[in-house]
Length: 105
Image (cartoon, rainbow, N blue to C red; front, side, top):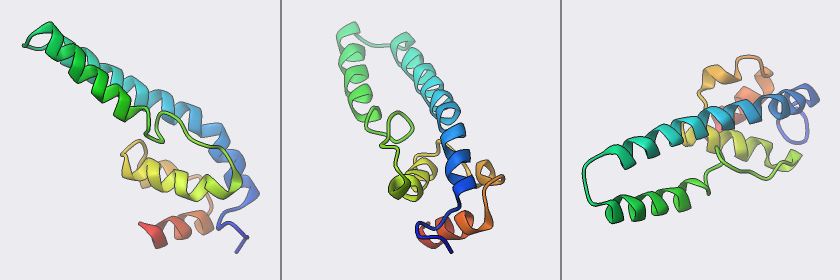
């Protein structure tokens, strides 16, 4: 097992995939925001509800994260917990990484 619980190939694959995962997640959030703004209610209520949602959502790993070797596993766990990705999204990754993830999930 490597020092961090994943291989160099896993790290390269993570760096390759993260932007697509984040774009898909933010697309999902945007659709939720549109639905919120298009719904019933006073404009001011919708505005402040949206402002709170964005303030909370921008803290998600699916929106922004710290890219480093040491944060790779915690980032993947957060992405799974936030439902940005599923275990199926990790199919191309090594068994070592998947076993490490499963130890923490």
